[in-house]
Length: 237
Figure 1 (cartoon, rainbow, N blue to C red):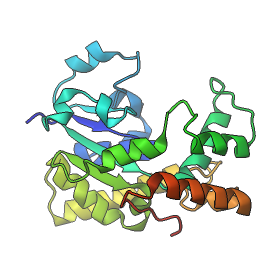
Figure 2 (cartoon, rainbow, N blue to C red):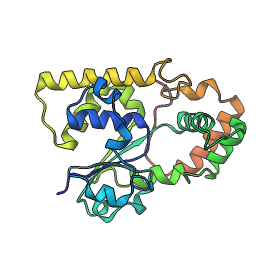
Figure 3 (cartoon, one colour):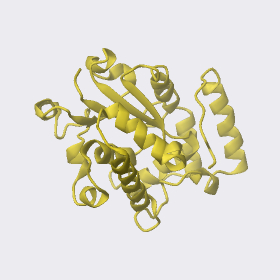
């Protein structure tokens, strides 16, 4: 089996944790590198698919593609995929702040309008509801590790152990405890107020911006689009 790994959407934080665990690196080392060069994006024109094909296995590759558009190696179980899902209320706030922060996006509309577009599947990313449910249908596949963003904050040690087993790397007890501590440091660096002024990494971020009316409408849409799915999320920690 190939050891190529595609990191699916959830957060850029996961890509750094995956790199940390797979390479036995430390937070300071990651802080000095361009992590996007270590985990190129499959569907981006740069660095390009030809260059990705030339990378030495095991390769770490990330993507935002729906499951059905991923390379056949993933569908056939010949490569591994880690998918991270985040509760959609925090996700839509984080998306909004991200769009507002980039010159290329230059979104200047209201959050209410942005949220309506999210609920109606009108954002450039397509339907979050379809995307997450499509991967959830494969969460029991041997080559798929389905993670939740909130669990990284709630029980990081268990998540690191899952990653270690899934990636096939070896740590003794002391090394594993050290790796968990390194991941804690990395998350603190990424989510503290100074490193992330808009607070996009917090769990429960949505409570600061959702109105009562917006929350009721979102819950209704969520129930309509996710009602037949047994995937659950933590909206509070």
